[in-house]
Image (cartoon, rainbow, N blue to C red; front, side):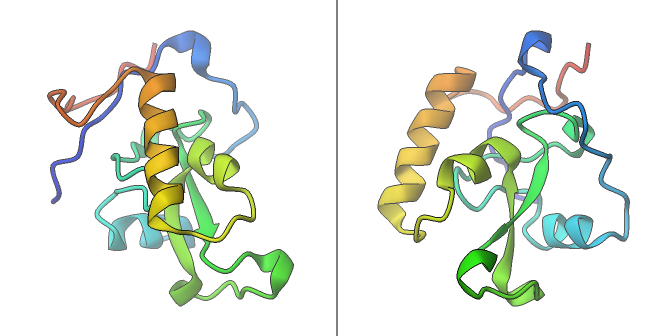
Length: 123
């Protein structure tokens, strides 16, 4: 498994209350597993227990569904809900990924130099 940094998530940041847990065997889980749990936009680890949080897993369409993208595995990648919302319908480029990563690091107070956490505090 890839050793990616894991940001600390304060309780006050949890604001995705209506999301449901990612179930083993679901399409989201299979997409997450295929990427070894790494967000394809910011390149940080996606912790599945944070399903109701902005750092929870979401599925990003490489070609957005709004412009004809399909819901097939080839067009889907895992992303944090927060990263996915920042991307919007923009075309994915390395510059966009770097921008999202920088914003992510600023918002959640992490950097690639930090020691990765083995678990996220859920309370």
